[in-house]
Length: 390
Image 1 (cartoon, helix red, strand yellow):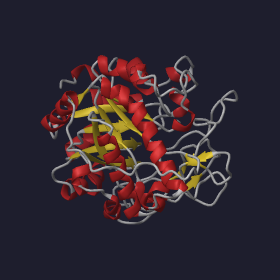
Image 2 (cartoon, rainbow, N blue to C red):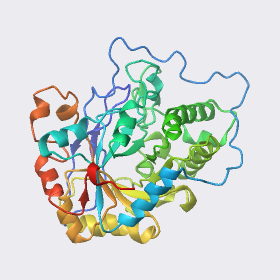
Image 3 (spheres, rainbow, N blue to C red):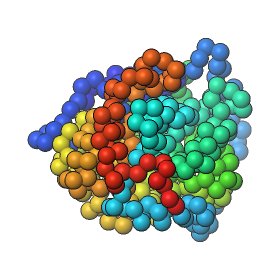
Image 4 (cartoon, rainbow, N blue to C red):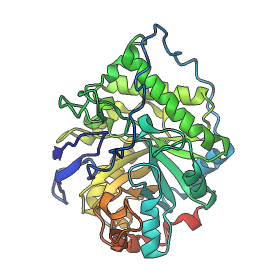
């Protein structure tokens, strides 16, 4: 897989060339994207302080975790997911970059049905400010989605300072627009990196707390694809697991009882997918497991090399298609036996970035076009937003 990297304030990788079929090695790649998607506009200012000052004070270490107690709606959602598991599948869409429902609106515009899940991304957490160009504290978009019957999900492309000291990055590497941020410092409570990770986790807690206050459950997918080692948090399996546990405990101790945790393994190029399981933090910290699959057109391959692999390794967990692009139609996957509890095509930046544009009126898409969606809607087991019942 050849990836091209762009300056950040960080961008997702542009997929240059990669495909697989029935006889090829299973591949799990990064979603294609556009270099503009994470660049703030000219009038945006960098955060005044992006790294906690070294004032000699250590952030509080996680205290012993309180017994996990889910909010009423989180309990209902988890039960609902188990109830439909293997019988129905929830449709989902990804926000176009961060904090919107553009992709879901595009599907509705062309098919007349809303996907059941909308996933948001805290990718721009360093820039979030009250009333700013990105304001994660304003939960109206997520609240509206929930009130209309939808399920809220969230993930986190975790940006830290890039090597050049001015940009932000989540891709690990030596280039100026990448980062060498050391996840192993999570075990060194006196380090600047530790303080930064704790401060950033606390920012996410602050963003999720208003949703907790309204008992809006969230499917939360942090530290995704760690085993691929293209993100800084995946460069050391033991440290990544430690980071996951600390995040989990910090969420718990902050009273975030509305969160269901989703784990997405990955493996490096030409490595067995089972290698990605080395990053698994433990059953007590995970509710859902899933794969991110791109460019696999054979449904039987998806069933055998992805769905079955997860089901065998994690027999008591819900199994989801947490990201996808250019894969077999969901009807073919279902017939082959890949009965995901939910599926979520990645977004197409150019197609859905501007809902009032002529591009938005088109039905092609880099990851799942309208023909793909219409086939999905023709299956009685594919659930739309109006059919969610928990």
